[in-house]
Image (cartoon, rainbow, N blue to C red; front, side, top):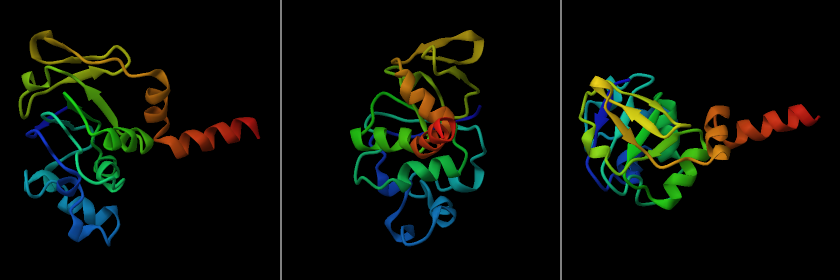
Amino acid sequence: MRTWRLPADIDTDQLAPGHAMKHGLEVIGKHCLEAVRPEFARQVRPGDVIVAGENFGIGSSREQAASVLVHLGVAAVIAPSYSGLYFRNAFNVGLLLLTCRDAKRILDGDAISFDARAGVVRRARNEEIVCEPIPGFLLDMVEAGGLMNQLKRRMEKSG
């Protein structure tokens, strides 16, 4: 997995710019992070990971700010902290967030792997960065592709 390093305080308007909000995720995705990393929307690939500073997802409660990263194929966001609203929106749409105090040790373009259940990110030379544990119900939600998919599966099993 390739990493995209971002600064602290990435807000929802940088992820899903207001001028694109009248459109769907296809258009929003073309403008995702254009103010910070203009090449991101063109070059991000499924499985890439965003690594950011503190306060990722601050700003409005727009769900599209998390949904657009899922739409673009981002596998996870790794940061020391998140906005509370963004944190909940992300898991609801199936976006994995790893809270890692030492996320700054992960550099732009690093090849990494992670084990979300174990709460570990691995860099080159088997360097491990420990992340906060994620409750199982949130990991299950991500694996299902978000809350709505998880609820649909439950209904199908019980129906």
